[in-house]
Length: 280
Image 1 (cartoon, rainbow, N blue to C red):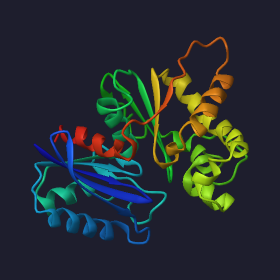
Image 2 (tube, one colour):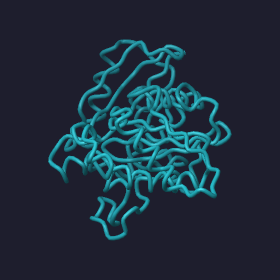
Image 3 (cartoon, rainbow, N blue to C red):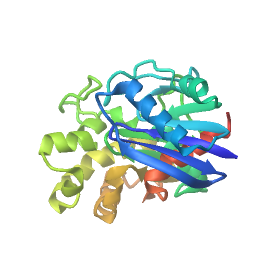
């Protein structure tokens, strides 16, 4: 069984062809933020048709809220033009493939739970720390999406009520304080440089831990897995983050604090798309 997997993000997009559980072809490039859906769809078609291999099904992880029951993109706060886009339907029509789509954090959670650092963890909380910040929850082997497909959206949890305005319109969101997009805009330096600075990281993990504390206290996850580009900072980020989270979780709580990097790296969402597609 061959599966086409798409990971559409605000900074990069990735296309992969799986044969079973093995990636046999892949393509990645920067997202044209001004191009919108039409540019993205053209690039996907060009890539897939250029491979000359037919897939049997398609799974999609999209970097923004997805209305799962309707299989439509709700919106993207980082790239314009995506509101109410029926992306899965477009794939079905243009490539003649059954297709299913979910938010990229939900896909990443599913990918890490089935194939990566989240195996055996129930519940699992997955956070993507990248251009934006998203979250996914896996309970009993399945994604918890909530009544309106917004469960797990940790990026828009308020950590500083008097903080700067987020792209969503609220103030002091975790995403506004900690995501790659705003780190670069606020500090004028690439996020990877900032996260190599111990003094900066000591301040940064306070807000990041506030967001994760909410996840710990609400769902008591057996494990927290963090993926996305900023997670590549490794122990320079994870060691102080674990310490800060333990400090914030009061001593009366026996909540587990197991925070680990994604085992699948940049491929977490692609493997999640593979798992999603099994339900086509």
